[in-house]
Amino acid sequence: MSTELYIGMMSGTSMDGVDAVIAELDGHSCHVRHTYSIPYSAELRAALLDLHTPAHNELELAASAANQLAHLYAETVRALLASAYVDKSRIRAIGCHGQTIRHRPELGFTLQLGNAALLAELLDMTVIADFRSRDVAAGGQGAPLVPAFHQAVFAHPQANRAVINIGGIANITDLPSAGEVRGFDSGPGNMLMDAWTEKHLGERYDAGGRWAATGVVIEKLLQQWLQYPYFSASPPKSTGRDSFNMAWLEQHLEGAYAPEDVQRTLLELTARSIANAINDFCDNVDEAYICGGGAHNSLLLERLQELLPAIKIRLSDSLGIGVNWVEAAAFAWLAQQCMEGKPANLPAVTGAKGPRILGAIYAR
Image 1 (cartoon, rainbow, N blue to C red):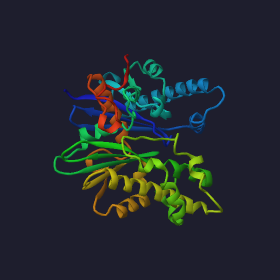
Image 2: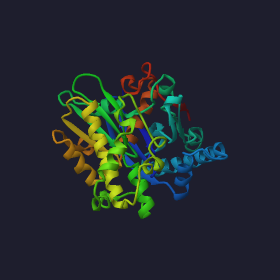
Image 3: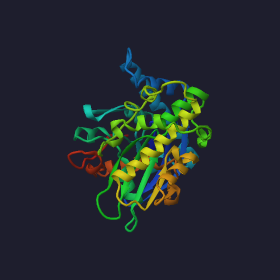
Image 4: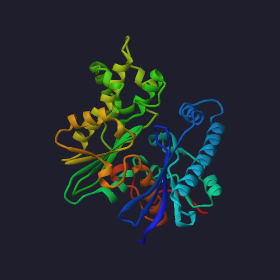
């Protein structure tokens, strides 16, 4: 396969904005050449969050939000190309994840907004979207999809590696030096911490875990949360805001807990659920690489290293892709797989009946 340029775009469960990369791909490696990010406006973010709850006229509201996202995605691509001095004719295709607003594989569907048809029209470029639906149609979870990318670019023949992406939801890819790749969502990543921070501080997130560091773990509350069946369920499994949300967070809040103590306990929930998942479902991990927004939370990283003392924990930067850009790069790679007619799911990860070509192509 010759070297080609693709654009990958990701707007994840944290709903903080759009990350985009220009990736140089040859089938065996991925080099992120240029990056760009645009935050969501407060209005768009609020509209998307509202769509997670059934409401009057939600079909029209969802269609309107999808169009707004398409315009924002187009703005992001134009800014990315301009900042990189790259003409769009050099880009074979754009891989656009879209914004997940419902993920119910147990009911046979997953929904990502973005209006890829409009995006293709706005840019006059080929767009590939709707990566998850084919895997769900084949009986899979439709998530996580990034383990195939992790295998392609991060696996090592002598080291047993894990890649831990801590976005709104945390997911883990187990990359043994020999044997089958596994991957699954371990549970909440930043999502609950961000929601609690926004409620009490009016900030989008707890920078560096500094607010959490002023609190103490409420062990009783932590153990109640950890009893939630998702954590002990065996992979394949995936989750999202449908399961982990403010209502879930608050159902065990009894009495007057200090907000900073709840925040510290939420951080501990993320750290322990990741560590427990690695201990329970991954074999003999030697080294782990962190990516996603959670990689900037120094207290969270400290706790992970304390909970997993035998594993060398590093950032994905040391593997050549910065922590903010791994998932966007993955969707550039997934777009290439689609354009080449190659399967991109891992049935052992998602539970699908077999390998499937992922994505719908909106040709220019």
